[in-house]
Image 1 (cartoon, one colour):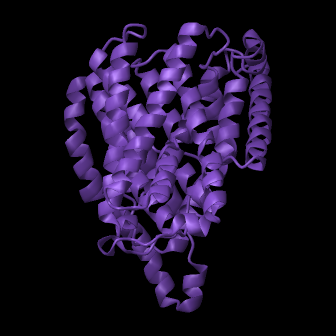
Image 2 (spheres, helix red, strand yellow; image 1 turned 30 degrees about the vertical axis):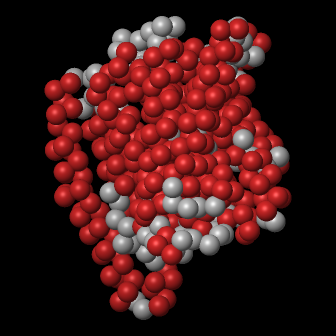
Image 3 (tube, one colour; image 1 turned 180 degrees about the horizontal axis):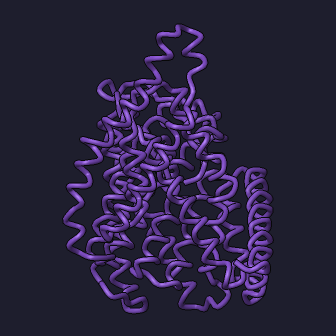
Length: 439
């Protein structure tokens, strides 16, 4: 790097930190999750404003590869935390209603998104029409688990029955959405197709070799703490060596899926998913907190900017506005109707079913991750990518106001989130912890 490139790189990073922090704080002040402001910051520093002059000044072309590398690293760490926080134990006691809500809230937008894709394919042709249709359906079906958990905590719904159902349903949605995306990647042929045949071998190695090794890594630490008695348990912490093993395994897992022709986000997500859940809660919090701090403050804002640099809304005309309207209508209607019907099939009251539907419509950062994968694989083009980013912003931003309106009418979060379950659906709501409020 030349001295000029180093200077430009530091100026760009400082601008990223300032813009994401300021707009994230502004979003929180108006009752929105910070990710809405941070995502908006990425769009505003892109080519949408001032014909791209601000983007060219802050992020010259010769430093953008370095920003992209930071963004990729942030994405790897974020997907690891999402996988690690994915706990199907939340289903306990409410399997039937959570599965019903999740399936309906995936199938409805998947179907409507596929139909919309058939219409949009004429204007947004790609190399694989099948991959395009499947991808748009999958993008419509996603629910952002991390930001949903943060919304529940901020609204007071986190410890209610509705909050428990929403978290359990979103966890299943995550699994279904990433499975659908894996199918899209395979159909799109994002690499040497023969290497994709090694995916079952990779999955078996993660479950049968990597997971037991990770369990043994942390079990030794727990045993030493147990022998030290109560004070040992209180002092239990993740060592540098343990964290290095986790980070090294995470990077190698991401490398493996990228080499197979899938995408590195799958390797990061799966490595987080196979992390042992029988470690102490203190150890789990330390692992995620240490990785999240730098990710949340620096790496993910870099990802937002890199994503925003590819969003150009300055030339939107009547056709683009019409397509945006169709995308918003399809995304909101499919997700809302699917979740509502899934809840009502299990005799959840109408108002609480509406709350579930509003929560499941949250897309956030998870949507942006999926869109980025689609853009990198050339399943969608920059024009449609920009419209889908606006949809992600709109559907995430509308959740808070909807909950506020429903809460005022029903007497607050406690009355809104708790209700009399049918006998076969009764169970305690889980108390969830979200890593960063991003999703």
